[in-house]
Image (cartoon, rainbow, N blue to C red; front, side, top):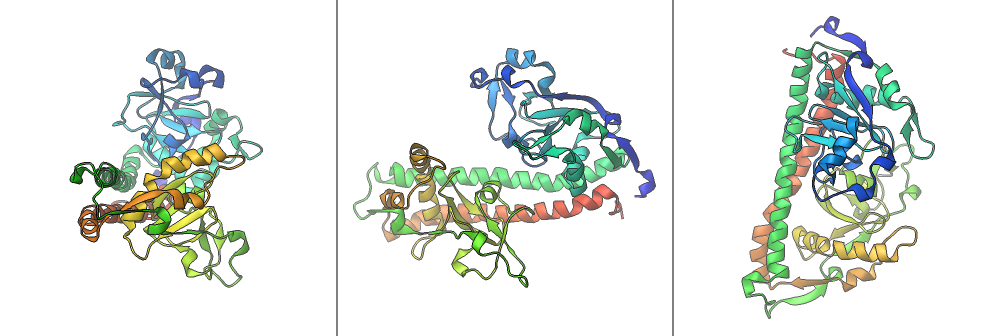
Length: 402
């Protein structure tokens, strides 16, 4: 594709409609209902497409009263306050036909010169992010000054719509596979949780009673919980290639980005995290996950969970089983940052099956967890491939149809 086909536009020439979210006083917590029109927040603006895992809702009447704060399929939603750089489009197959954007967002509707998916991919590229954040202020809560007027003045070089569609098709095919893997993983997790509950909570295969040849213990009995290091003391030496530091932020987002801190790769091997390791954030935001974001150094406030005697699925499921109680304990004791003490691991009761029952349960649950990990690793590969293609396609460096 010749770059002569590309034309430079000011964003105002590509926009049919642009509007800010409602004033905070127009949409308070007491407005929320159990169902109705979903209200978007930052968690819905992760990635390229609208994330529809969870919502708050307002009534149809309330949503209608908010006028231009309503967003529809094909619209683009951008964060202008808080987690800057977030930009997604609402796909044509979204769960709902309309949404309400928050006071920290604005929405854009494109005209016929550009398709929304293309714009979103563009503004996720390094150049696009640079332009999007060019007027950002980091004083207090990060925000974009005069977001809608500034956005309309940005310039962008784009190819004809037919070429935009070709580019989007390539990139979205990778995102489609990532979404499919995520859906499969949600199902795998649900299956594993259902089996775990049946065997270890309800004791369904045994008439509701724990078998006499089983025993009880604690989380500390079945696994080792290694707390990470204060990585600011272990920075890379001049001749070393730094290792990304796994902190709560990285665990929550599932990967270590370019902004991740670095540590020396010479730290003790037990503090190095690899794909498939069970990580438990015990301070601040408590969560348990199977890390598949590549090799990292384990930061303090995170446990790396391992065991010499039991399979990964066993201590992963049991740690997750106690997570809600740990969250409650942390919130109850919170002064500055909620956390749990190591002694809580000793108090967290687990049921340990006989060898024969353990092997029987393991044959059902282990393949589910193994596939979940494999899918997460594949998603990282797909994301890397997409992110490498993105700037080449957006700049016209990569020829299409060759």
